[in-house]
Image (cartoon, helix red, strand yellow):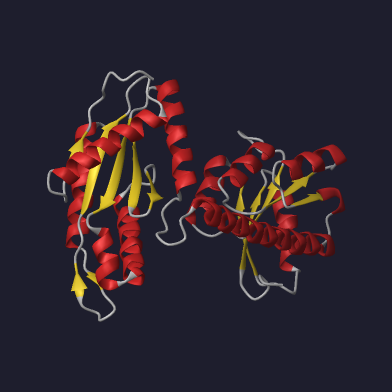
Amino acid sequence: MATEDKILKVLICDDDSQDRKLIRHYINLISDRDIVVLEAERIREIWAALEKGRIDLVLLDLQMPGKSGMQWLKEIVENQLAPVVILTGHGSEDIAAASFQNGAVGYLSKASLSVERLSQTINDALDKWEQQLLLKGDQEQLERLISRDALTGVLNRREVMKRLDEKIRQARRYGEGFVVIMLDIDHFKQVNDNYGHLVGDDVLEKIGSILQQRLRETDAAGRYGGDEFLIILSKTELDLALMAASRIRKTIMKAKMRNTGAHSFKVTASQGLTSYVPGDNKRLIIERADRALRIAKIAGRNRVRVEEFSTAQV
């Protein structure tokens, strides 16, 4: 078992001191694991233990003061703080089912508590938790493969357009403004012609990395097509978006690209910005950002330009 070679930190959450003493006694009799036991009976003690450091397993009584064990279970599971085994004075199938439905990885009645039962429950719970983490990791990897552009690491076109749809819905419902940036690498065809497509791929990968580093977690960047990137700045006014775009432009301009001979060269990027206005749809927003990008190109490239809202009908 993967966890048997490390010291386990087990947190007993129970407002009955005698029950805690009994559970600690049984844990100390478990010989196949090195276990450190912590105890908590009040809300602040439980939070202090969870926030202080790694907890490998929580043994949680259903009857807790101030907040029920089931409420604690939901909160611990939602925040992925630790695996939880529910303890009850007198168990029932309904309570067991509710515990597992709310995310518990184990269930044990105190009435049938013994060293063997407790040891087996801990082993099974940790195995189940490990499997859940593996499945979650596999799911996250799958979601990343589906949503990310393999070369640049930013969102692919399908996913960034999906994010744009979501932002439009949020804006219509909650009045949350946002800004869209269309970014294009200047003279990218010359990079491919002069240095080859492998170097061009390296440039695209570098730009993708810069965008991910410069944007907030609430923002989104995706590869719109070829050497074009679509950026969505959440809850952002146009003046602040211009500052963000300017920082991106300067970072790209200063970045060193390398050709196959390890000689460095530089690239620049042009950007077109537009902000969401009531009545907008996806097509109108992208058209305005694209017009602003063309203006930046015409003006000499390595520039940021804004396309204000026009009276075009939705």
